[in-house]
Structure formats: C-alpha cells, structure tokens
Image 1 (cartoon, rainbow, N blue to C red):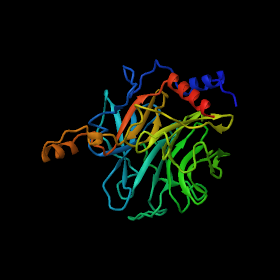
Image 2: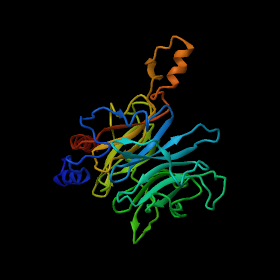
Image 3: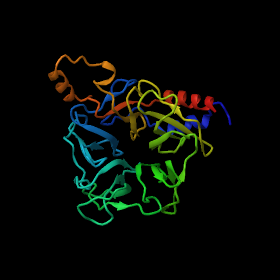
Image 4: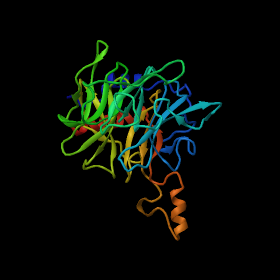
Length: 334
C-alpha cells in the first residue's frame, strides 16, 4: 500500500468539505480548535444530551435526551429550529412521543430521510420490546410526521442495532451485536434496497475491543467511530478515524486531545458542510478533582451546571489539515 497522501485523496477531502464562504446556523466566526458546548443553555442543559445532527440547510438540529430509567436506555428524540438568529426551545420529534425509547437520529445527506433506533414494537401499542431496531421516517411538507418504517429483517434481527449513518449513495453503516459478531456493519444500497450487512475490517472492529457509534463521510472516504478497550485510549472511550483505501479500511487513529479526554467521547456526526465534528462527551466538573466542594450545597449546585458529567454535545473544527494529519498517521501505522 502506498504510504504517501495521494492527490486523489486530497480531491476527495475537498469534495467532502464545502466552501468556507457559506455560513450556516452552526458556523463560528472564530476557529474552534478546542471543543465547545453547542447552543449552551438551549440544546445543552444539565440533562443528558447526545446524538446531534443537522438538516442539510443547517436550520434544524435533531438530538436525543437520555432520561433516567430503571429499565436500561430510555431516550427521547428532540428537534430545535434556527429562527431569527437563535435556536428555539427543543420539542419532541413527532415520531418520538416518549412511549418508547428512541435514540440515534441521523438525517440522510439529501435531507429526505431520518433514520433512528427504537425499541418500539412492529405494531402500534403502548409497550416496548427488549431489543433495538433501525427505523426511518420520510420528510413531508409538515416535517418528520410520516409513520416510522422498520428497515426489515435483513438489517434488524433479534439482537440490537444502533447508530445508523448513511452515505450519499445510500449505503447504510450501523452497529450491531449480531450473532455473527458485535461491531460496525455496512449494508450497501443497491437497486433501491439494502443488501446483506457485512462486518467492516478488523482495523475498525479490532479484536478484544468494542467499536460502536459510527459516522461515515458522505463520500465514504473516512469513518469516525467510538471505540473502547484500545491501548491508546485517553479515558472511558475515545473517537477514532479510519480511511477508505481502495475499498479497504486503514488502521484506525485516535483523534487525540482535546477532542478525546479522560471521560467518554462517543456519538460523532459531521455537519452538512463538512467543517465541524459534533460529538457527545461525559466530561464535567466532577472529573479529576476539578471541583472544590466545601459543603453539601456546593455538591448540589454542581449537579445543576451544564457540564455535570451527564453528557453534552460539543462542536470542534474538522479541517482539511487535521484530516490530512490523521491520514498520514493512519498510513504510518500500517
């Protein structure tokens, strides 16, 4: 395998990252080399927020709230709109009323479909089933108000499926703990339907590690995912990147600090213009003795701050230079 960064790769990166002249709701006037909280006080609160993604125009932000539950994961999908220069108070997605656990929203690059994961039954009813399947809703004139459709038995099985991510050509990437092995899978979209999912290379689904929460670039040139148990991990779980080299995946590279931390980093997503990486982190005031609690009141008040370790959504630059640097490291590891 060639060890140099090819011109074709640089062209591919250029196609992934659009012109810096266009401004979106999430655009920053200043560089963001360090992660910042997105829409602090509106999207990010003392609650547990995760899984953020945008519509192609950047004017709708869809994310999940992880609520306290004694029955495992229980999430609700929320939507916020960008109007008159600010984000509106989030509201429940019309397909996520809180009856079931709905999580991991992903909007297709063309903005016509919203994929998500749910433990809802196949038929309507006020109960849930023990495993999670991938569903899709279509965009209508009234928003995401169509009836969610289960992707079917070829994708979903009796095990769990999580974190769908779709390339521009329709290829579906997701995590599953299938009988054939836990890890990140890809189902190619061919002739208007999904093919049998195939598990990605061992460079991503590395032995004795857990790789989940995948985000594919629109052109499938790279994939960012969360992984646990790797020797170079910074903390509770880190984000990694792997590059598509002639149909195979390169050795995964840790995104490094300050994106990864002593806490858990997961749920990556790339903005429609390719300029920013959004992700979830559980970093907070209780970590590594950052807080100085002198009284019970101090501790109670710490729980009320946004970065209380419950999980928040962060934004950071995803520049060409950064991707080129990671690409070089990835090739060097092979």
